Structures are given as structure tokens and as C-alpha cells.
Amino acid sequence: MPANNLHVIELLNDLIATSHDSEEGFGKAAKGVHSDELRDMFTEISNQRAAFAAELEEQVRRLGGKPDTAGHYGAILHPAGEISKRGFAPRTTWRSWPSAAAARSPR
Image 1 (cartoon, rainbow, N blue to C red):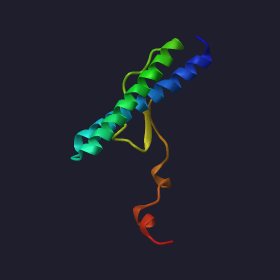
Image 2 (spheres, one colour):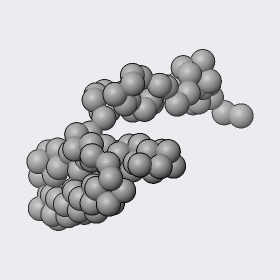
Image 3 (cartoon, helix red, strand yellow):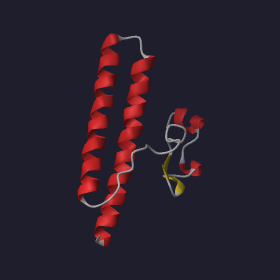
Image 4 (cartoon, rainbow, N blue to C red):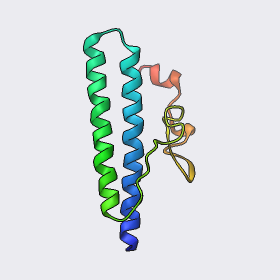
């Protein structure tokens, strides 16, 4: 398998995991709302994310790889970072986030 395929497969697997995280999140949201309209909308979005993941999984297979079928471990617990099998890699540091007080103060 060409090295370029390995990089593409890794990226696709990350997108698959993200799609599964989104599917799970919208599924949980659908179960937690009291509005039938919102429940239907969240369920539809969850189903779309599952379909997106299935399409990406098929592409990984076409490239000769093995699709990652799980979401990111603890992604809901760590929304500020990306989590992969290699470990936690924060997208930003806490120091770069404005404090809550600064965010509320007028400019």
C-alpha cells in the first residue's frame, strides 16, 4: 500500500470517529428532549452521521485499509481536544482561552 494511502486512511479514520461521535451525541440529544419535533430532527441527524461514517468506511476499504469503527475515546468529556489512539492532543491551551470574567466585561 502506498504511503500516501496510509495518510489518507488515517485522515478518513479520524473523520469516521468524528462521525460516530456526532451520531452518538445527536442520538443522546434525541433521547433527552421532550419535543417530538426536536427528537425527530436529532434522530435524523444521528442517522445521517451513521450513513456518513459508513460511506467513509467503504472508502477506507477501497484504499486497502481497515476502518476504525469506534468514536474518539472520551470525546464528549474533552470537547477542547482531539483524542486518538495515540493519546490526547489539545487543539488549544487553556491559557489562550479568555477568562469568563473577561468574556463578560464590556469592551
